Amino acid sequence: MNTMWNRLKSHTALAARRAAVLFCAASMALMPAEIAVAGDARLVKIDQGGAGQSSRSIVLGLNKAAIVELPVAARDVLVSNPEIVDAVVRTNRRTYLIGLAVGQTNAFFFNEAGQQILNLEIRVARDLSGLRETLRQYFPKANIDVESINDHVVLSGMVASATEADRAHDLAARYIGVTRENVLNMLGIEGKDQVMLKVTVAEMQRNVIKQLGVNLTSAADFGDFALRLATTNAFSIQGQSLGGLSTAGTAVSGSDGSVGAALRMMERTGLLKTLAEPNLTAISGESAKFLAGGEFPVPTSRDRDGNVQLEFKPFGVGLNFTPVVLSEGRISLKISTEVSELSSEGAFVLQGAGGDGVTVPGLKVRRAETTLELPSGGSLVMAGLLSDSTRQNIDGVPGAKDIPVLGQLFRSRDYQSNETELVVIVTPYLVDPTSRDKLALPTDGFAPASDMDTILMGRLNATYGARGAAPAGKSLQGPVGFVVD
Image 1 (cartoon, rainbow, N blue to C red):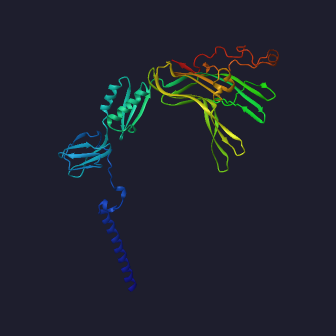
Image 2 (spheres, one colour; image 1 turned 30 degrees about the vertical axis):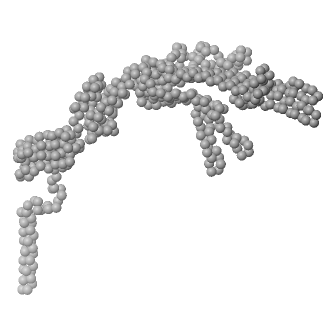
Image 3 (cartoon, rainbow, N blue to C red; image 1 turned 135 degrees about the vertical axis):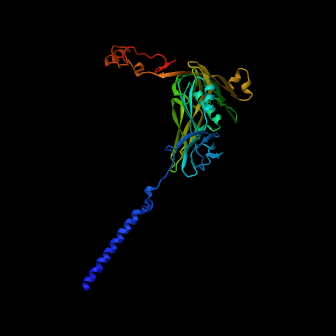
């Protein structure tokens, strides 16, 4: 009996637990879906704007306003960045938007029920329509377009010359009231912008040196009294005698004394010719350099071990120029040309510990630097120098050197004359590159002589233009490598 009672109690408890589970399941089925999935982030709704039926976008000019007319009444207006755009709500359906700063922002409009009426994407940029009209007015033949990127302005298109591009750059910066760094110049140049500069440097130097000197040596005895005289007349301009004729002889000789004379005569005539025609090509606005010469070492310091540190200085014919194509046929040139040579004048001697020294030579420099404007193919003498200097010295014994005729025995004469004539001619050209097959080299047509021609005829090379020696139709004519307008 007890066993049956226990079984009945167990079945009753199990039935009660099943009923409780069913009740809970039914209760959960009757709950709202939001409560059943509370905490599930996948059901969260986020509206960033920018897409959808209620989204619009506008470009608002800086310091300008736009009017927004709504189809229904709005209760709330939200602007994400009020420092860029200010929203002034005039009525519940009309709002004024004012662009305060360059940038991007957005605005949301909600009705009384909290539903979104409009999402407005706003970009505030500079109004460049006035700048476009100004550029068309001042550059009617140019094709210039203006765009705005944030707080910067971009110029694009084509202009006739680099000067027009630079002027348009300045005009845009001044019009919008910013610095040149805020204006990006992407204008292209329609005209030619490669300039070849041909420079001719011609110089003649003539110098004459004359030296004439007499030195006397005399000895005489007057009883117990002996007298000896000697004159040594140096050359004060050139220093010691440079060579020429030097003689010594005894003019008077007797039992009581003798007189000896030394005669030194020298005359030197020198001539120097310098002719250089360097050609350089550079793009408008870029620099080009040329040097035909060399470099010589100059001691500058010593290191910790006592070794001499050297620095090399250039000399020769140098050219440095920067062309700017202003317009078709107008070229502005900034030119610096120099002709230098090593000279013993102004040399510096470094004495060593053992008596040996190092001589640093000086430089004789003729330099010209200027800025000029020329048409393509026009020439101008940039520097013309004519110099004539004469130096003469007479050294001798006071009083005796002034005696007529005989005074020549007591004096020496040193004479020097230098004449220099320098001319620099510059000629710019607007050029285009040419094809390689139209070029000729100085080595074209060269053929070494055979052993028989060298031994019998003394030739170092065969005759130019021999069959097969040079390509037909090639010769050096004009500025090689360029087509000159």
